[in-house]
Image (cartoon, rainbow, N blue to C red; front, side, top):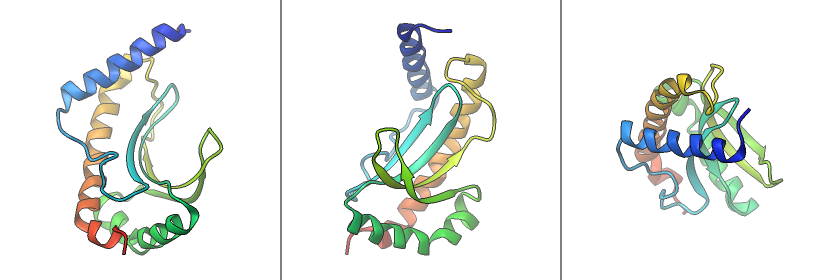
Length: 143
């Protein structure tokens, strides 16, 4: 087991190492579309990349419908493993819509032996997510 401080230090070291191993500017929160954000997630049990739609319900539904219309393109041309969840409940109780790709292996941010495969997974899959977004952002933008 790790203390909170040791866990914090490992997390910080992972993200610093990831940034040094794959130095580039990710879109993440800077999508230019209110409520759209890309996220990396890595904890003691899993790793995944996401496109989250966090908006008021009316706009979330409108954006989700646009994403649904592009579902086959996203899966066929970019991320075949993408999972669409129109209603995803965050740990804080907030409901969002989410498209995500999980790493299908047991990994832990506390286990440095799994870091490299997570970094490669993040780089490859977020790059594909961003390519999809850049190719179709005109469709996804607010009317």
